[in-house]
Length: 506
Image (cartoon, rainbow, N blue to C red):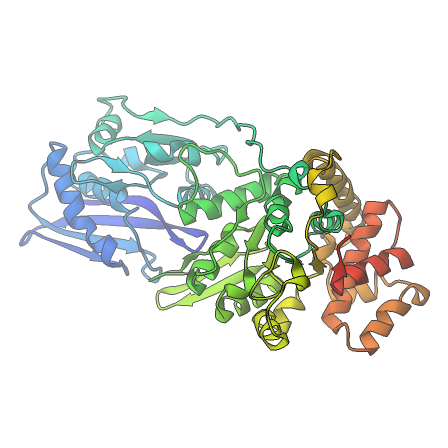
């Protein structure tokens, strides 16, 4: 009996799994049967493939067609199997040879006219093909640049089913060959030079970038909270190759990677609206869950402006990813793991009326103030390292001629501090102070008792929790790296304590 095999890739979260597709043509009543745990979109491929073959001047086999997707225990979803399914049927019918598809992975959705349409998540699919030892990948032509980000692999791009059939039969060369993508320099983003005043806010932003710390900014409208948050990603170090590949794969699966884009080198910045749902922030959707804003902000910044206006469930859903740096989403079709090591920036007004003049013209009662700020739960704020209160920008600062440092100047100091931390933490396989485990802070990196008196007093008075002590120590180590000293002293610990306990901006 005619039997042919092709291969494609199924995605579960960010993990790609090579799926072997077997097509068998046998005598009997013409029929098409697909087995191997396909979802509705995969089962619908039968009608797309049939129309695409006929419109590509090919005959649909009038035989009993059985297609098996292996491994059968892996859920298959999406339209990315169309091209591989079509090639398996054609190979079983003898239109093309099985040898022409050896060690080849095919990805692509078919239109009824035979066109090959682009997909989301091509990059992790091609990575899975490379890990499986396949030598060639055929993708939609619109995904060619993305697929070429994976080195040492023969990547081809096709625009239509007819072009691919002609290429595999040696009758046509209407297939594009992939080449290495040249990385374009990143476009300039918002600059710290544009922020006037707020010396304490700028200092906190630099500390956050140098150590990978989370920030809570509180202040009246116009104080510069949003402007500071928007400039944090611009002073973070560029992503290295491994980080860029990971972030680019997430953006590919999420469908936010621009066509023809190269690696994402700049740390991403996400700023969802306060009406966002839990699924849009954490991840969700039918079937296997898709990545949310916290995963799209991986290795970058997640900014929640007007944080008290977010739903309580959304804010509390951030607590576990803030600790673990990843999120696991369970759905009926399986579970998906997504990285979520982001830097959180929260911004809030001091009260519901948000008077620009601060307490002078505030009409809120003490009860309404407490109720408004209580929307940010204690457990969430306890996971935020820096608590900064911003005052309104003064007339002298706003209308004066004083020039502020640019993002490029601050980024140089941030990179030097990151390098110092990376060298010190290399023995533990860490790179940022924010990643140091609590036990290591109290054992390997234990500080002298004489420098810990302020922290111990705050702990005894209930101003700091055990988690808060760890976060103060991490910030102190970052301040030491920025100052070029080997370990934090009393000055670094006192400044870290001030930033933790809502230091007032100058």
